[in-house]
Length: 298
Image (cartoon, rainbow, N blue to C red; front, side, top):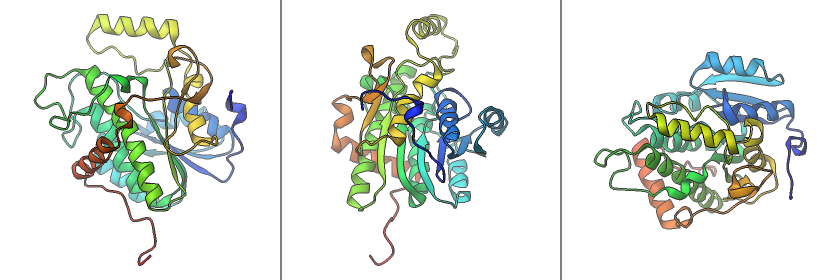
């Protein structure tokens, strides 16, 4: 498929799709597009009031449930209350370039939210997922590395951009290892990933560093596509005929904008041993591991 637009999304009637961070940005745009195709869309959001405001503008069949990915108790509560089947889980929510902040469980905010929160959520929901898991990464992963000696920036001088890049690299390593484990378990579920290119979302926020903020806004103004266009790679990864561990992004200049296609990733994102090690460490940090998917005794 060389082009893909919202009109190419087949009917999603009878399907349940969970979208984290669906109250704003590309998450909201993806949720709106899927609701318009008759999916039951669950907006998993930290602020239910904002979620309800977003849902009210979508039409279709939507519901809002509270989920704070920076709080593992909230992740566990969300998963425990979600007893029905899930056809697609879209791990979209994220934070970008905050000052050094800790999650409720003590993790660096970007690693804790962007990776560990979604890691725990996915594994807790996985026995009920019957289609695919889509995790939103970023081209910023190319600048990332996984520092197993200091994943949570407790000894290094904190660099918000470096922490963001590490979390987005972790998203791709997670997708690769999840796909490997699903195949090993004989599961029909697949894991895919996507990045939005340069999207004009509210992730570009003032963080006290005026020059970086102004540069970010200027780049966004020149190159960015709309939230709706930025959501297309996520939608492509969610509904198109793509293989497990595929990675979708824009097809235009430097993958900044344009119709989605399957794209490449960094060498570090293809390191199977790092992916396995990160999985093991993430399971230890969150207390959540890969679930048993086959019936007992099989």
